[in-house]
Amino acid sequence: MKPEAFTEQAAGRVIRVGQGEVAYHAFVPAPLPPALTLDPDLILTLSDADRALGELAGLGRAIANPSLLVRPFMRQEAVLSSRIEGTQADLADLYGYEAGQLLLPGVRPRKQASDVREVFNYVQAMEYGLERLETLPLSQRLIREVHARLMDGVRGDTATPGEFRRSQNWIGPPGCLLAQASYVPPPVPEMAEALDALEKYLHEGSAYPPLVRLACIHYQFEAIHPFIDGNGRVGRLLVPLLMVSWGLLPHPLLYLSVYFERRREDYYRLLMAVSTHGDWRAWTSFFLQGVAAQARDAVARAKRLQDLQADWRDALQRKRASALVLRLADALFERPILTIPVAAEVLSTSYPSAKAAVAKLEAIGALRQVAAEGTAKTYEAARILDIVTGEDESEDAMQIKEIGQKL
Image (cartoon, rainbow, N blue to C red):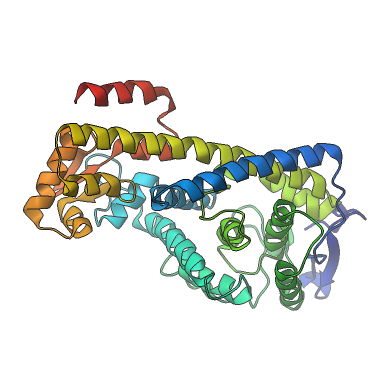
């Protein structure tokens, strides 16, 4: 790390560690809050983000079955947040894994099971964190517990899952040594002090609005980099966890990984600019724009999912489908890839009854068979996957028309 890259306005201090040839420089971020002026342009950006987030929160409170949105959105976030770290699994792979079918043979190329497990762990970590928030405030303890579930049984699981690092880490090109690192976070003693200060900031009052505080907290966690591995994913997990904890959203419906992944160079550049130049304004504006963009995107996708659910229910009612079939149609929004045994488990019914229900959903185009390995047939609700992943926009009208023609 080049100490000369850090200006007098840097959001912390550069320290020299060690002596002689093994000496290196590390960055210690200053405690939050920073000195940040909310100028008129930034206030407008904040107002836009607040409005968009408020609309999403209202939708989340109004919907009768929040899992219709929570489960698919959470899983897409798991895919994208893990992709930033180099995994190759997609949403269908994750649902296939959860259905016990790794991974749709003959339809999609098999992904590395380890990649899919990493994505699955992300979901498990998020669900665990949300459950723990009911009894434990967001804290160093909860962060460690979330990290333990994130890293369980995957690459990096030897890097002390659930424990803050006891040695120096660094960020740089693959295979680089400490001397060639582009960023070196604080050494262990200073890291512990920074974490204590961050935890205090999480629970104390602040003159800054919540979304501005979130931008600061996300930067601070990434700058501290308290784990040997998994820091990026944990840092992105903290955003929806805090939004729910602070009452900004009733459910975890907003995720920023798709925004960060599409603008990866800007994301890392602006984080680094806070460290080197104290440019909190540019980073905060970028973060708030992401909140606004992703909140609006989530609202649009949520409405398409609700429309699709209504179309399917209408089609099934016209065919005088049983309540069991209607229940399975609704369950597809939580499990858009399933086998007949999984359908039987979801419905708490027999295999023949589940098979008949699946056939009814095939008849209206809600399900299609995508794989058969031995006696295990796998079905997917492709329209749900397309809406969640954003691959449906150009085909919406055509698909709705096709559903109507099947009535």
